[in-house]
Image 1 (cartoon, rainbow, N blue to C red):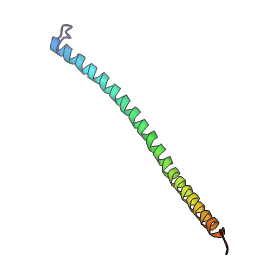
Image 2 (tube, rainbow, N blue to C red):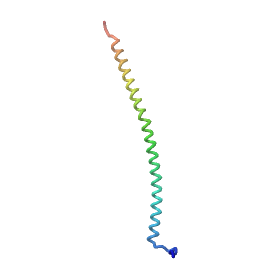
Image 3 (tube, helix red, strand yellow):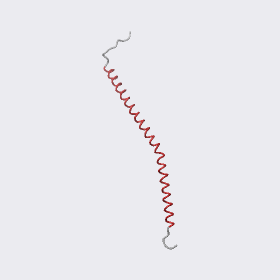
Image 4 (cartoon, rainbow, N blue to C red):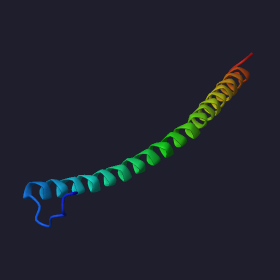
Length: 85
């Protein structure tokens, strides 16, 4: 014959069940927070991937502008003569 259900359980068992329920609840909260962190990390990864090509283009344009400025300065200073030739 199976044991009859009792409504007066041992206080230690009841306390353990409460602790387990609390821990399950906290575990679910932590799981949700971890999901949010993973989503945020994925967004940061996408931003860095997009920025990776952007800084290369900025460096290319900066180098081209510096080269153009240097050549322009060279030709202007060597084409202008001061004094008799």
